[in-house]
Image (tube, rainbow, N blue to C red; front, side, top):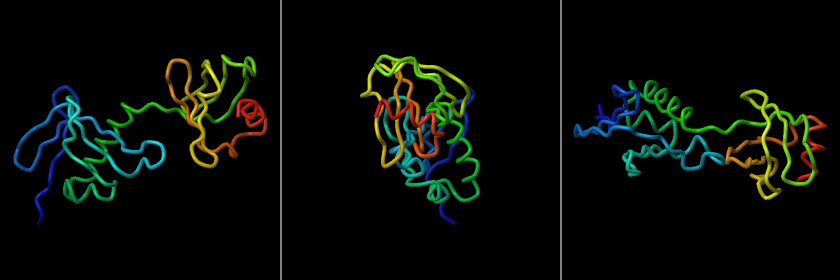
Length: 164
């Protein structure tokens, strides 16, 4: 049986710790997706608090080969929990109201995390990601994703069309 390349655990402060095959322990590990929007399931770096990459995971399927198959479910749960803490990108499900069709404008929307409103500074803060996906950044830098424009209701699409 192959020895795992590393093991993941939580330290006393609840942060991720990575223990290498040779016994070296790196505290305060942060998982970072290589392509968080276009390929969230592929390419994941485990980075220490100084920004140095300590481990690389090609995909979730490859996780079993680097941590061992008996530890892969636990490691995946730890990584996904850390990613959830780190990443905040609500998906817009519906647009309810836009204060004006000129910018800046206040948008009232429903997201997968609840109702909210935000200010869009300019049309350049709406970026197309592929054929039908958008990334909207508010004035505070919070990014909202619209995974599929065509899945929005007709009223939401009509409001959005004014900005595209």
